[in-house]
Image 1 (cartoon, rainbow, N blue to C red):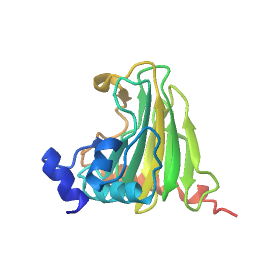
Image 2: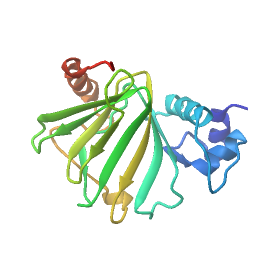
Image 3: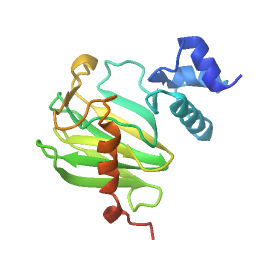
Image 4: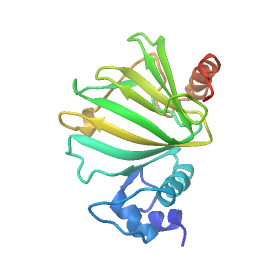
Length: 196
């Protein structure tokens, strides 16, 4: 039985995320206090991201949403759109490490201007980007799929009030999204720097 079928049977659809423990169960992998994470997990994340309506899939390594450090494997597919946002908790910071593929973190001003582009992963000189508290940002997938290890530290997680969005960017699902994504992708050519 394939992973999409197993997950769909358990949840009735492809959810936004599952726990690492559940994924190990679906894949018949050993789960314990110390574990290594490799290709089987990354491959499953890619398959689930491609099957997801959001074009993204999270594998949660933390056991409880109330933990102050959220650790996850974040798999994105090209065309995923997460609107520019900042986290409402003034202590929230994030780190993205590209494990497979490549992504670009865009930093924005309060009025929507691009003030920084930080490509990481395959074909770029860096694999890690840190997003400081209060930064307005969005992540674009630059390859067919990209797998990132993400750490998000915060004082307290509140899913209903985690992010502030801005009127200068379209909301997820708006018809303006493809055009806006196209504008962001068009900004990437000057920053490409192949690894030496």
